Image 1 (cartoon, rainbow, N blue to C red):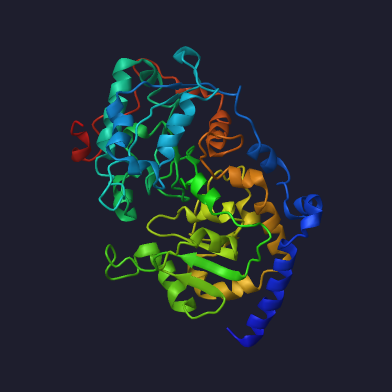
Image 2: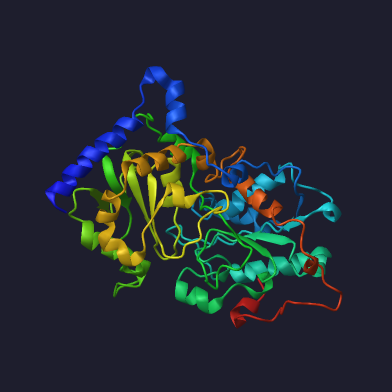
Length: 420
């Protein structure tokens, strides 16, 4: 990058930082200036209250499907797949819960499929299909509700890399496809990519879990200057799983490193410093490239810390896209355009940057990305319920005739059919 471009952005950054640093004696005016409500229906949807709009019945499963797994390995509570655990805990005390299944709009099966962890703390998905099949067999034998719809009025939280395809490598996930028994159920999942076999129509895409209390503990004063232009910490190559290179992140992260490792505007590294959260709050743009899957907790962290997310993941389906105006708060860069990233970002008008920052400063925006304990209004738990409520009433085809069965209980890989 030429000195003229760098000089231009130093001047532009001064404008951005000056706008971000409000005078402490004008707090009320600053709050109005530096936060902006989402206009139109998206803002209304984000602030919806689901209570009174749906009722959820929670199946009482044996502890081996959920609580016993956490007791065996409490690390499940802290990884980015933990939404399945906290959603269960939230629903147990939620005002939408009903103890009468006959009045329920939705049925929830609290099965944890990401609690079989490696020594490094990564979930192994290989038993997950058997665990899920076993849980569905259990509820279909003990209660009549699954059988009357083949699961069409049931929802499951499946936060694996590729959702209910249950594999962390995309090629093998595509080969597996969604677990056949879940073909009619609504899936609540972190994975989202258009025209992909692991995202079926009607799924609700959610943010990955990022620990709210941990992020809260690392907040810095809001008037801290954003002195970093572009920030990223993470892998660029995964030599352990992709020794030849080019497959991991479809080459996008490798391209980031090769093109910008020496660029003074790009603070990018594989190091993960103790000041990681603080650094994001000092950055204007935070890179959110795909890895093995298109999503990662960086998206949550960027929004919470007011850092404009730069989303590099072609055809990604983002969390709560009907409520969060991602095009207005983020920057989308096609994977093939990564080498032009410096030009794309330095060409953005300052007014556009300031507006994105004001939208990101909206507390409702941040809250929708988090799974706090205890739950709070407009958080991710409530956004999931809003998504379920918007699907009501169920269409006529949900309820089957006694002889009309849609699911093939013996479909899928032979290994999935083994008892768990």
